[in-house]
Amino acid sequence: MDMRSTAKDGFIDAFEWNILKTRGMEYKIQFTGPTGSNAVEAAVKLARKATNRTNVISFTNGFHGCSLGALALTGNHQNRHASKSLLNQATRAAYDGYYGEEIDTSDLLEKILCDPSGGVDTPAAFILETVQGEGGLNTASAQWCKKIERIARDLGSLLIVDDIQAGCGRTGSFFSFETLDITPDIVVMAKSISGYGLPMSLVLIKPEFDIWNPGEHNGTFRGNNHAFVTSEQAINHFWTDPLFMNLLNENQLSFGLHLNHISDKYNYRVKGRGMMKGIDFLDERVAAEIRRENFKNGLITETCGPRDEIVKLLPPITVSITEVDQAMAIFEHSIARATA
Ligand SMILES: Cc1ncc(COP(=O)(O)O)c(C=O)c1O
View 1 (tube, rainbow, N blue to C red):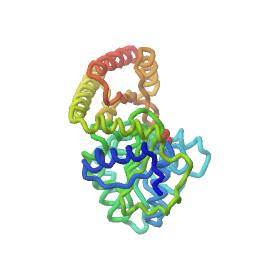
View 2: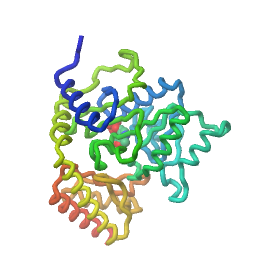
View 3: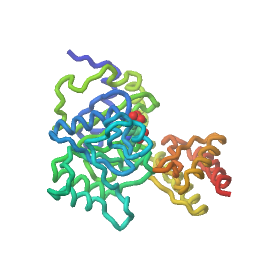
View 4: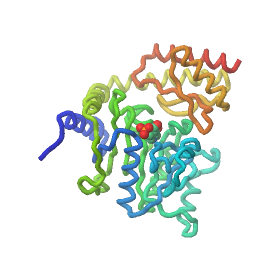
């Protein structure tokens, strides 16, 4: 008996036809509890089941959520410290560029993993964000991601991309990894996937790894009918319209140009990719002051990075150029005040 609601059917059809098939991708869709952390927990549990291994490699400054399994993969001290639990079954490796441009951290990782006495258990999976949202807008190069993918394949480990923050068009394409020429085995999505800010998350699984037994990873609230309706509308309305891609490209360009101008003028570094960018103010007090000043003037921004020293801007990807101009004027005004 088919128990799917009309809303669920509508979402699955829209996602399969207008997101997956148009990109030549084949994934099974699993609905988990509504948070990003729920999706991460399911993804990692499945990778462990599929490989019969325990260890998972995650990366410095990665953020994957605050439930205990996801927290073991998250780098941030403040988040980790709060748990007072043993956060184990995970090994931290250096993200792309962690030791500076000259050092290829994927080489270091491969060396230690391929050394029988390297002391790191062969992982069930590698989990990474292509742009680290909470960790400081660090970006991974295509070359580095491809190398991690190759290491995962060589070791029989799964590659999980956490697209919870960087997905849904945020970096300029629906999936953040589309321009990086990698094919993750599992993708986790949440946040903007409902198109409307409603709680919803999902796990995309390569068919060969969909080895759950019926009801094995269950729970009462799996998928959200309201979110299915809004998500279907968002996919069909925006992601089937070629003009939407033009708008997104124009927005990325205008947003990037504004930030480059600010960076040149004030000599601070721009970080991030697409519509997920910010400026590194090197000092958490300056960043906090700018965030407060932005808010006073009607612009919501966040701080991120290991010490909250980076001001992050995540404009709606459907923003207009005029709104970008207005937001950037407020931002520049806040910077001028905080750094005067
Ligand atoms: C990349 C990434 N993964 C996972 C999560 C966890 O999602 P949630 O807060 O919905 O549990 C977040 C939340 O910010 C995130 O940015």
